[in-house]
Each structure stands twice: as structure tokens, then as C-alpha cells.
Length: 413
Image 1 (cartoon, one colour):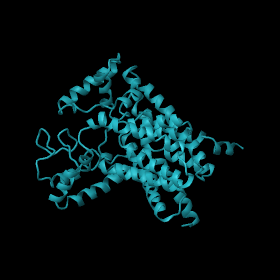
Image 2 (tube, one colour):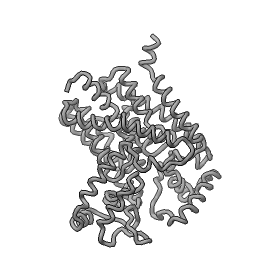
Image 3 (cartoon, rainbow, N blue to C red):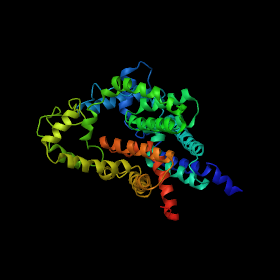
Image 4 (tube, one colour):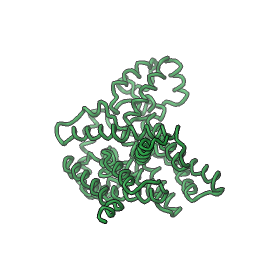
């Protein structure tokens, strides 16, 4: 009886998530703001674009950031910090001066995310037994980037949270609202959302002969996106084409020199006459891309190899970044944690997803969810390799890891 209660409840999953979160906060510190990625950037929005009475901590961190950036060239003046994310995520620090409050809110949302995933899995009938469902949830919550993202209320965690919440609820208006929130938080979410919309639309037309509430709820976010992109996200330095050449800050910095060796024209130069792809001076378009590839034989092959490395980085292989560690704070354990998760869960989950899509007959739900997830992950990796970005589709990769192992055990290929 007790075993059945443990099997059917979320107690084990919640305990594991709580335990790992507690250990993480213990090593990082309850008042550590580094768990919120790019905090200084979003804190800049509160200090430069609002008139709210801000906490002393927020002002102090803002002034320190100005001093640090003054010595390294300063901020991109035209880059507008995402106002929606800035407001909903870091207000515990900017208004109340409490990183601990931010972590508490993030922890509660992390528990909620796990609960929503379980509800959604039961709703769509994934054909998982109780213990397999627990394994799915455990596989999601032991991800280092899920722990860090939830406790730090990162952009990718909140984007994923609102997506799952939108899928979980049945109200059409609220679905549209939460999908729109995801669009507003992460510009790369459109790489997921467009194929997601077409998948639901095709399913409606081919099978139901009518437009479902899920498809209808996609209309407003798709209308919102171009306006938000034009007025907010377009201020991001560089362009999507520029990002194809960008390989710094991803653990593969050594590839940058191989890329710039192919650039013979004086393009994308910074103030020091060095090539810099993430720059206000680097606004490459597709015509530039074709011209560069045409004039620089072999660059396409270099970019393809860099793209493969970005895929591995996105899956969690940190390369150089795994070795750039502080001497304190448990960072070596954190990198070992990331490496083991990559080897045991992310990489095989990704491989199983690709393999089963190609060789196994799947239901439309399974097939479309895997295709949409692969398009998002492979599409995002074209621009930047970062394990944080895989958070959006990690439930799919973990699901196919479990499904793939089940198939191998039964030899039902």
C-alpha cells in the first residue's frame, strides 16, 4: 500500500528536486545572484527604464556593472533589456533586495512545473507506467540547468514554464496568454512555436476537420511576435546571420580564429579593428552570407563542423567552459554533474529521438512532438550552443530515452 502511494504520488520526485535544490543553494549561497543568468543586463532595465523606488542592492549592482563595463568598452547602448522578463523575474531583487525571495519563488515554480508535466503526460496518455512517469520527471528535475534555471528564474525556465502551463490548461484565452508570455520572454521560442502551430493545424485539418482550441490559441502569439521582434528583440546586437559565425562563450572559443581567418573583407570590425560578430557594427544578411561563402572556399565546411560542436554544447558537453572554474563553491562537482547528465540522459535521449523518428512507427502526437523538438533544438544550435536552451525540449528527450530503452529491452524494432 505504501509502495503504491509512493509510486502514484510526486513525493519521490519532489524530494529529489528539493534535495538537489537545497544542496545547490548551500554551495552557491542563498544571496548569490549568479543563478539568474545575465542578471546585470536585466537589472539595467529597472535602473535605466523605470522610475520605481529600487532597492539599495539593485542600485549597487547596477553601479558596479557600469564600472566593470566601462573598462571593457561598455554596454551596447541600443540593446534594450527584455522589459517583460525583467519585470516578472528579478523584481524580488530590484524592489525588495532579496535574492532569497527570488529563489523561493523559483523553487515553487519548479515544483509546479513538475506537477504540470505529470498532469500533461496523463492528459495526452503517453502510455507510461507509474514508475516510468516518475523516471521521466526525475530525469527532468535532476538536470543541472533545470535546477539553476528554476531557482534563478532564467529566461529559458520561464519560457518553458509558460509553454507547459499553456498546454496544461483548457481555457483558450489563457492558452494564448501563456504562449504569448513565452514569445515575449525568448525570441528563439519562435523556432519551436511555428512548427508547433503547423503540427496542430495539420492534425486538425487531416483528422478532426475542424480547428481546435489549441490551434486557435496560437494565433495571438504569432501576431504579437513580429511587433515584439521589431520594437524589442531587434535591438539585440548583430543579426541571426551574424550568429551563424559566432562561436565565442560556448566552450569552443578556439574555433573563432579558424572562422575569422576566412574573412578577407573589412566587415564586422569593432573599435579595435577586430572581427566581432555580436556587435552593433555587424548586421549581416543572407546576401552577405552567400557572398562570404562564395568568396571564402572552405568556410562552409568550417561552419558545419562548428555547428556540430554547438549541437554537443547544447546537449550539455561544455568543453572549455567545464575547465574555467572558480576554486570555491563546488563548481567541479557541478561540471561533473553536467557531464554525467550529458552522457547518461541528454545525448542518448537525443539519439533515441532521432532514431525513433526515422525507423519507428509513432503516433501522430509522438511523431509531431519529436519533429518540433528537433527543429527547435537543431535550429537554435545554428546560432548558439548552450545547454540552457535545451531545457524547453528536455521532457521530449527524456521521454524518448525511456521509450528507446523499453523498445531495446523488448527488441521490438
